[in-house]
View 1 (cartoon, rainbow, N blue to C red):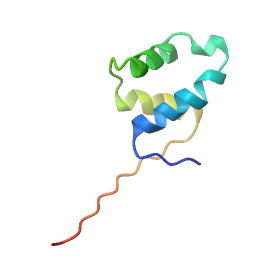
View 2 (view 1 turned 90 degrees about the vertical axis):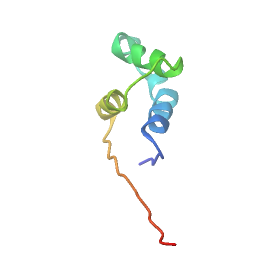
View 3 (view 1 turned 60 degrees about the vertical axis):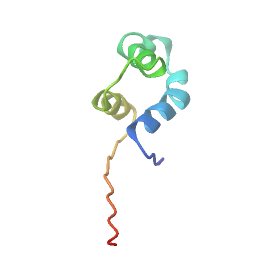
View 4 (view 1 turned 180 degrees about the vertical axis):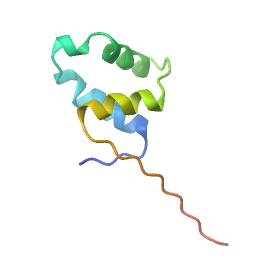
Amino acid sequence: MKTFASMEEAFKWWLTNVYPSLPAEMKKGRLTNAWRDFTHKRGISEARMKEILSEFGEIEVQTLIKYTPK
C-alpha cells in the first residue's frame, strides 16, 4: 500500500511507476490522453484520475481536517 497527500501525487506516481510498464495496446486512447493532459498541464479532473487509478488497484480517499483551538 502507498499513501499520497493528493490525487495528483498518486496519479503522478502511477504515471511514473505503472504506466511505462503497460503493454503498448493498453497505452492507446484514453490512457495516453490522460498521460498527455496531466504531463502537459492541459487539465485532468480528479474524477478521471481516480477512475484510471481504480482500474489498476484499490483507491481509498480520505479527508483529514485538523482543528486546534486558539
